[in-house]
Image (cartoon, rainbow, N blue to C red):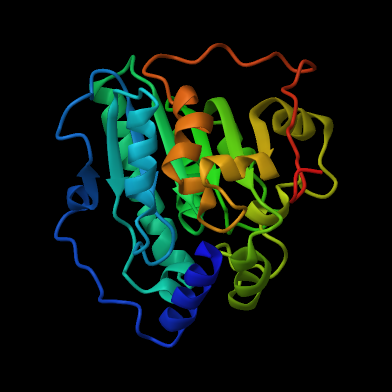
Length: 281
């Protein structure tokens, strides 16, 4: 049912009735603290909505994190113009906003050098998250990155981002996501490609990838496929099912801890990649 409602919303937005544009006077105005100004000494989680930013996904993610025991600061990065297709298609504007996000991460780490930083992106917002991590200077790294229903193309080269991730990049995908299966191919992925997105069928190493690249994918990328048992957590395999509070509480909150993550597994001892087809088979 949620998939039908989300699809209808996108179609309305495509017709030009998706809401009003938003203005921000300063870069700092784009970062809204969702924890009443507290928790910065324990770490930072930045949530990035999907295109349009009108479906409440960040609020649900925050709820799931809090219910799961996350006590560090939780911020929302307000990147959307309020127009779904503009958000999905304007790659230059999106990359500039990603640089804003990268600058925010760097500022926070300068002020709190021993505190972890985690990023959570949804749909088109996953593009901004990945580009922001790519844009970090060598001395800055994030701890974990979570992509939910990513509309980045599945062949997008994640190496630039993975090199700046101290823990893991978790890609939550679903082959049952009709928005990614039908609408995104028609509109183009957020990186302006036309193939399947990483949120639909997972990410693959670049064609012709060498051993070091494949090792980076193996050691840093964990792909979490939707399975039928996730329905008990409110995730029906649909586009925003991965943002349901119960799903976030059980699958993401435990990883967004307010401490430094354990050291990544050495090359050759890569993390097991979880790939579950729609229906749990």
